[in-house]
Amino acid sequence: MTRVTFSLAAGRGIRSVDLRGHAGYADEGEDIVCAAISSAVMLTHALLFDVQRIPVDTVIEDDGAHIRITLPQGGGFEKGQDAMQALRIHLSELEQDYSEYMNVMEVHTNAED
Image 1 (cartoon, helix red, strand yellow):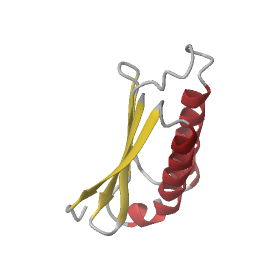
Image 2: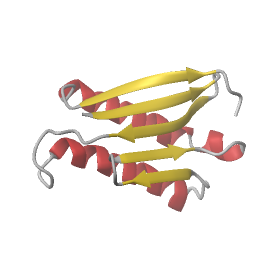
Image 3: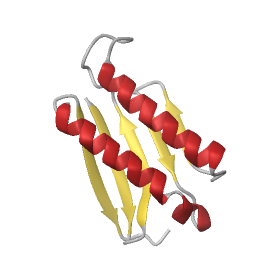
Image 4: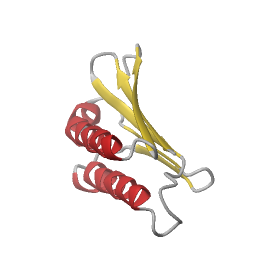
């Protein structure tokens, strides 16, 4: 199962998204759920980093299938909200059809960063 956690910063918006694990819908290379999740995350990262030039902190670990994208403090945080909100909506809608293979949740933090 892929676990997706969006961290929300004290009423300001999405601070980060953290994805862990393989969906397990099908064998590697044929897993449409993993492909959909990966494609959405890669598009979001390209929009944030390459198009909008936001210096996001990105962690990619093959071991354990882990990806995390964190928005920076300051103007980049606000500028990146549309992309992060779109990713949250897309993955939440995908979860409705494939809830056995992925879980999307939100964690609220009190941090002002």
